Length: 538
Image (cartoon, rainbow, N blue to C red; front, side, top):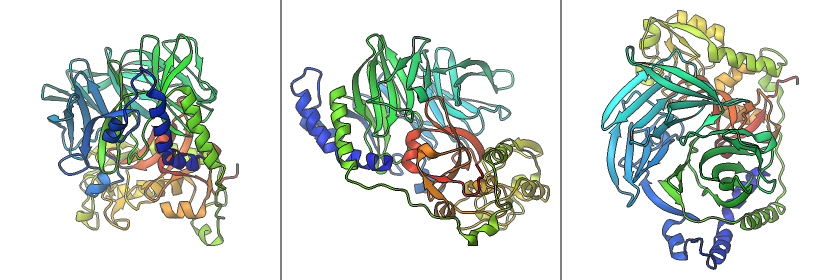
């Protein structure tokens, strides 16, 4: 049902466009004109920056031959500048907010993959690599790097900066903000302070209980969002505030919405739907600068930075959702269940497994400590060195690491991994441009990790997971079930306080190992299907 709603929401955008133009033509609150709509192509938004997806603009990882289509996963707006992270080309692009022209390029060291970016009031750029716990600052072209691979900042949710300094937010039933600092004598990163709640760039602290549809800012009385907008399955992201006006991003059955809330009157004063058509889902894609809301929209052919230009009313929103519902009711929706067959049972080490056992195995992969020798590091035992690439977090040898590395095509149990590491096999392999596992390497890829956690002696592919498991609704997910598409698979653990999905996964994208992190509702439900583990007893 939810997928039909999302598809149909996109199809009736033209209807909403006509309704909005008619409404705002009689109000002084500045609806965009028909000509402006044609110019921007995005209802209620003005295009600030338009970057072509190309070698000269921005690219996604899948387009240049490695990994899934990750790309510009962070941006910032400060003063008259717009900052866009270009991970593929290892740089931060700076554009003029006034005319959208490129004015500056800041290079990032090639070995770094950035998961969060923020810019302070002085224009100093902060970049965070969650794969190696590395903080990079760029100040007037000068690059400074501090790192600490011994830190365990998981499950990672997002990164930011305010007057107290740079910070990382960790996901869970209770969200935690960790402020980061650098040991000047050792150039080593450390956690200077831990605080409950989610801090924002303006210094305010938000708390959300998604299951109760309630939120608060700066320890104020909790506000319950109206049920015409949210339910227990929604996700929230606090953007910032100006006086009594709070700005939230809320993801519900009808898409992603920027919501303007008057905390004094408890009224929703405006809403705007973030356009459909994302090719990639950044964790933080909306910021408040001055009195304006800006949104990052990575599409397949272009990457846009948009500014909210006009707002819908509550009445318009409800008319919009009624239109979606009326069309959904015409469609019969049911999940196709594919039964687990006898021919696949050979890969199961036991006839059944509990959900606690699944998560215990996932935890062990995520916390496994192993010693990296020179052979493990240099890949000398890999069958074809041209088809091997070392995981980015493995930066030296004769040292210990935590977490089992990503290995394309790999499906090794912990005992197998331990033995192969002792035998000098290459630790992991993030070269994914081949059809099968490379001999002489060890670790797990995404589907191999799920297979091992499910107690299988062999390894299923992502296609096997989708073929032999029952597809279920996202609401029906329980810990140990899978989130899967043709290119990636993850283990679901739980939803956090803000409604994000907390998962365990073996992944590339700068992590290159088994990790524990938060993914947004938009990302998960927009890109993956939910599949029940066929071996569970509960």
